[in-house]
Length: 137
Image (cartoon, rainbow, N blue to C red; front, top):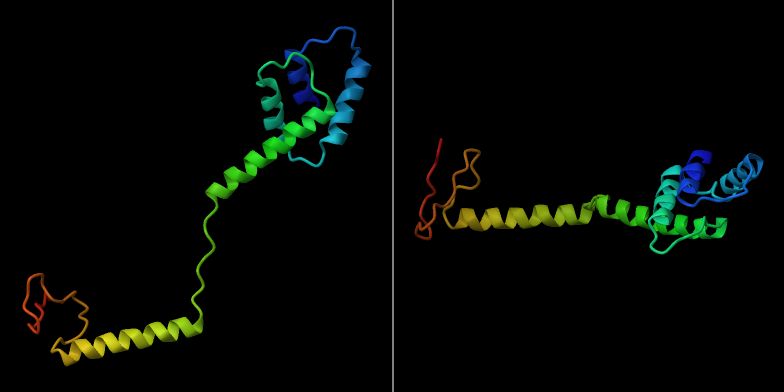
């Protein structure tokens, strides 16, 4: 945390701040920003540093605002990357799908189609209705 404050302080020179005062400032920041993970604080420092028109070193309250902004960006980014929840097929839906497949297969057989083939046999495009499928194996 102290390194981040030092890097930020370089962009906003302060005269008359002793090493002891700077160390106390670093401790306060570490305490006040402790609830945020380091990547969020790093992003907040960058947001502060690149804010147009900023001329003075930020207060802890301003840094908390930057951290909230950075955390929101991180959440939105992670939400965009997240995979959707898997679609769990319930037993009822599985049974309904099996029944539908059995009905389709029965209609095909009634129409003279021999049924599914492990070789990919099926109705060729343009074949007459009721024609036997061509086998490929």
